[in-house]
Image 1 (cartoon, rainbow, N blue to C red):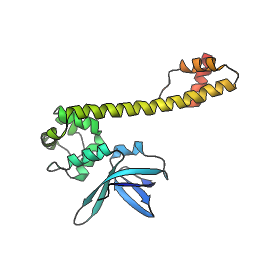
Image 2: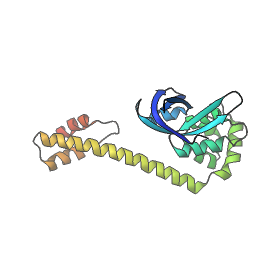
Image 3: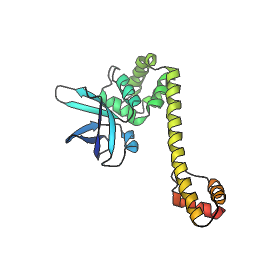
Length: 203
């Protein structure tokens, strides 16, 4: 069993990636939602994997987070849900959303996943409800939210620092520069240059 593959990201499509390690390119099937979290091509990436062995093929399914791999493992224990269907579900919703959908008997949300109708969604809820803990679901959701906030805060701190340094270089005092930059409503996609321009308007 291959637990994870760490190597250079050499190809990305909507449904699979290739990670090169030791001169070997591993083709890994991934959820469509994973694309947004991948690094640049050629960068190192670590993918947690599940190896599916069939008579006619050996397939690797991969995720960037161990939590997603664990949820994938739960999904494929449900009768009638194979690895590709499980991947489709995790392409349509996050593990957090799936946990809450299971706990709230939300058949409609789960049935929106490709290839999953209301009947299969009901069976999934019935079989996995005892395997998903409400307290654990809230803990993981909170952990993921805090991680996102930390990443966003890191990005904000970085561009704030750059903008303040640029204003100081233009002759403004540290306090003036910081005050003007902090008065700007910083959006997630804002660059240091845009923040600098907005800050200049407020000095």
